[in-house]
Image (tube, rainbow over all chains, first blue to last red; front, top):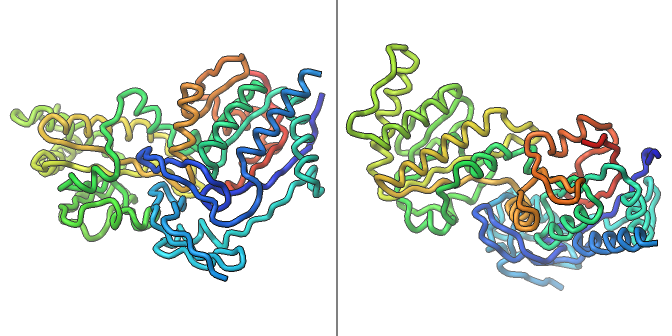
Length: 60
Length: 349
């Protein structure tokens, strides 16, 4: 089976600009990343939804 | 109407300065006060495209997610590749996805600082938080790095105001121009010089005599004999190095040997005095992604779920290795700003 050149692209937010959560400084100290402006959807949510769709599809 | 957000964390480089004052007007960032040029570029005006596309045709996000899920489910050899600009929470979801689909899992770490990661796994590290360095270090050694270029606020935020700075220029990797003392090393002598320094720090009395009359070896030992006492005389030495390759460049093939020798010196210095090694990191959440992958899989990058349980493949399982063995033109790393879910065809290992 070939998947050919199929490509799906989904823009997601940038940590600390649109995406809130936790990030680590270079010395592994955790710092909060804040969503200061609204923008593309959060990467975590998109990947989670996709994983759930993959798992659901595999059970058919 | 202006809105001001105080104490925003900037991910323009690994320093993650968390004192940025962001002003927002009409949904756009108009000022990122206290940010350096890298920080200003990281925030930009906060606008990014918020689109989804299937085969370059615009689509709804729901349709794109469904299509991506179908693509991933049918993939023979999927790869989940993490760009640096994602949160720990997103990285955790990416690990769960890779686990669910039996994918290879990697990040920019493989292609950039894997040498220092492996060296730390083998030797451990003598590290410290940036705060500890600021409050305890009295001697700072710039080991072939000038933070002004890629870590502009590192000195201002994380170094003590009063300190002795020792600059070590290594080939073309120059340390800051305003140091108190300066040493010049040919790049090819770096590892040997670190080994000599470590020997002198471990056994200062007999001076670990040069092994032969080779003039090159003698020059390395002569240099080390001058530098070693400057390190051991300190109350707390902060060694600062930058394992990240130049933008767009491949990781140096000797990164592992260099970082291993540097870690060994930092550890040896904790005999006669105190010392810590700070390894600088580039922009985004690189350390966070390494930490999440380690906590979830046991390994910081180059992980492979294709046999069910995670396997560590630091020498042949990074994304670039996989792509070079497969059809590399079908896959390109994301720009760091967008999540791109694209099909990858690669041979089974």
